Image 1 (cartoon, one colour):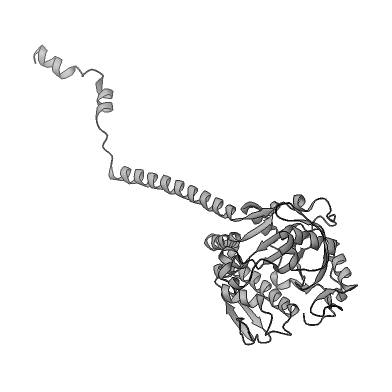
Image 2 (cartoon, rainbow, N blue to C red; image 1 turned 180 degrees about the vertical axis):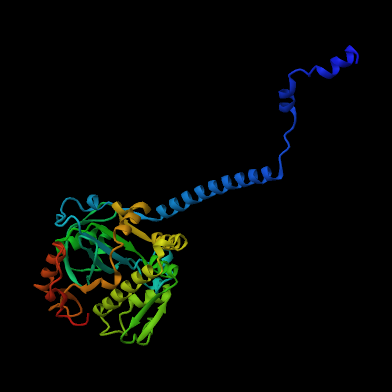
Length: 367
């Protein structure tokens, strides 16, 4: 072997093998390519899920309107007696604005009233709840209020309960209930027709059982005695039925509203709707779309935490009663709080005590 040949075969190029490895293109195996593709796909999915989750959260949060009760009402509010108990005022508005205009004869009715006013008392320990309905035809003394623009509204004697919402909005309803009962309202939730209908439809309907028929009139619902599965539109007619059931008064309608409320809560529990992410999103989207709450509940996180704290309450054991009322002596088409029954009711709620028997009885019998 010549020197020239030895030099060509034994002397490595500049940089040696390390340089050749760095400069040569990498050849990946099929397995490496698949793993790399999977990692990129996973990264894209995570980003998409994160963005989608944030969008859903922001969307649902943005659905909720709120009212600062302390600011709207001021300092003239009852003191909390039992810290562990909760009192939630549920207001069903018959507003015909927006999506509500096409529901239940909306085009023929102007303005908005509180179609339902329901105080739900959840005792300390969260084991059992009591729902107290206040008839919309009840004559009350409305206190001074502020409207939604902050303008002062003087109080009024012998005002009808459902007119309070029209006059001063949900904060005025809370103020009125607090003054008439002496019960501190911790939270309020207001839902309108569209929100109610959407919530029922998101559940796939609600099953109710009637012990007597509803003979619908003037566009109302007609149902035989027995079990019925109702969709959102039918449910709205059901809870608003007045004529064609019992004596055709608002007191008879309250019984239907309470029956439907317990049936709906039972449906939510039966479906484990709060444990099913897809169903939960549908419910949250439908429920928050037309929802107004106090500022302490005005986010998904706060609503979720509150719902979790109520998990021990069984709808089947919820006690549903009506504010004891008597027919007004001046206007028999109206009712007034019956005493001492009403006072006994509010004392029991305020002090987180069992409701006494006389507080569950009304001289006005239709309810």
